[in-house]
Image (cartoon, rainbow, N blue to C red; front, side, top):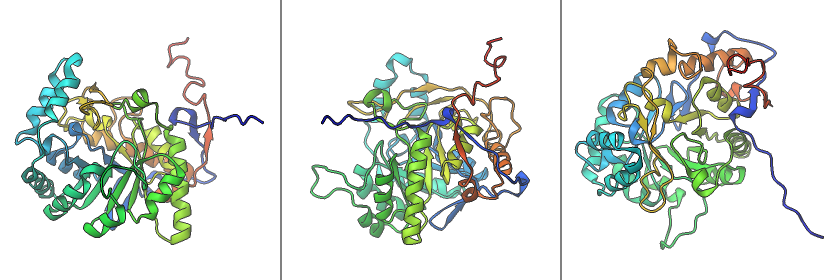
Length: 377
């Protein structure tokens, strides 16, 4: 008998909605904080480790708003004395030439003295210092970063698993890394129950979820790999809950990429995320180093770029992005106001209670009754 393969139905933000709760609460009563290890962050937003939205001064600006910035230790800030010049060159290069320019800029060697300098600059702003490294560079750069004062380490690649085959004598082992550095470690990215469970079982402190949904990422087009964010978040959140029931240890889930509006932020949290990681919305802030452009961490890959520079423009300050007042009606500003309003509608006093909200399949949620908004009438 022939066994036929079946396709599993998965869902993204545009295909689902959040059902109102049977009780409601005042938005002012809600608590939007989340915790990584023993570090508490006021609002559930982390900045992507993209050079256009991560610098020591930007980390300070994010901290002032209650959010957490993550700086890429393998980016331009660790390669150049004046990284803004490199950022400006990328931003100003004609689109047809930008990939080759990025490949040239990112071929400059990493400098350990600059890694230490940037971390000290972040700490001088009063911010929690979170830094990102790829798995290949983790064993070399992590001890340097922690010794310099980094508070959180993010080990991040397009797809991360607890079981990885490589040509090295001994690849990266997360239990070994946990013994090497005494700070919370976040690991990503993944999109499935089994992988999330195995990563949590290594002892890490958080898991990033998402492959390819970011506005500046082209992984899905280049490799065909990815799972829509609602399903990916729900699957990994189920692993988190099952892991907690088994061990008593809670490992936060951070949904990374594809979030542009307050509604998408709310859907990510309702799907089980403890926080989200965003990049392009931050690139639209007046404080962003990229000055209205953004590009992914994999964009300058020397042989297989999986991203592009996107021109996103500048919309307003970080304060407007997170708290308003909003100057637009499309949900791209006052993200925390939207989250608090949603939490009030479903009767959730905190992020974990928000996980109990009902998420429903609703393919017409963005078009039902919106003929005039869509220009159909």
